[in-house]
Structures are given as C-alpha cells and as structure tokens.
Image 1 (tube, rainbow, N blue to C red):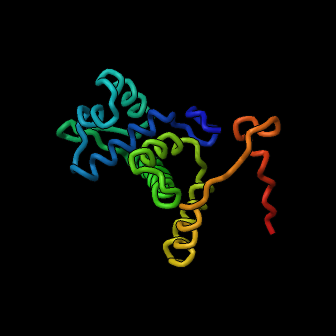
Image 2 (image 1 turned 60 degrees about the vertical axis):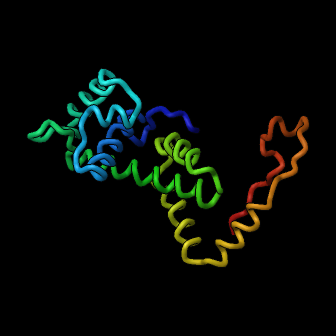
Image 3 (image 1 turned 45 degrees about the horizontal axis):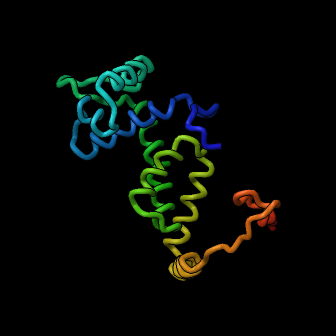
Length: 172
C-alpha cells in the first residue's frame, strides 16, 4: 500500500524524510545547507520548513553549525542516507529498467521511497546489479520489454486491469 503515511517500521514522516534527504543532498553538492536552500529545494515555505526542522531538532537528527548552516547528527545522516538510497534505487529501476522518463522516474521514486521496505529495496539492488553484470540478460530484457505491450480485454472479470489475467508465479 502506497499511502504516503508513516509506516509502522519507520518513525519519521515522509515530510521529515524529505527534509533530511534535502539537507544531506545539499551538503554533498554545495558543502553546506542553508534553510533557504532547503525550502527552495523542497518547494515549501520557510514557516513550513521551520516547523519540520523543529521536530527533527527535538529528535536529535538536525542541528546548526557555527555559521547557522543546517547539519545532520550521525542519526540524521544515517536516516538521510537510507532515504537517499531507497530513492536512488527506485529512480534507477524506473528509468533504466522500465524506461520511464527521467523526470517522471525521479518524481515517482520520491513518492515510493517512503513506503518500500529495506528488504524490497535490496532485491531491487540485486536485480540492478544482476543486469549490470549480465549484459546479455540486460539486452534481452530491454529488447523484450521495449516491444511488449499487453493486450488485455477489459471485461467483468477485469475491472480496469485488476490483474485477474495474471496467475500467481510459482516459486520453484
């Protein structure tokens, strides 16, 4: 279920995860993260950002350096890296395996990154690594997928593609 809501396994809301990832990415790119840059990056107002940052500061995930730039604590950096990892894996899968437009892949990865488990993320990593290590498999998959278009017939058994035409794959 892609609810965008806080899951039982994660204690941070999607917004908080976005804030941490934005701070981490800005610090990687520019060497610092100002509140104004984070707000611009996320497309939120300074007031909205301040509320979110306050909660992250109270949890000991974010602080400020001597220049008042945002810094991540070790726990904040770990959380930000985990979110970035899920985002990067999903964006890569969507763009490189499924052929989704890069902009759409980034947007959709950003939506999914909050609801995917570490186990599922690692299986995506396994698939991406397998495809990078096996050029023949990658070529076959890309060729077959780029020319494949399902030909389902909508009907009573399949209301707007309920996937009833698929049978469970047996795991041998």
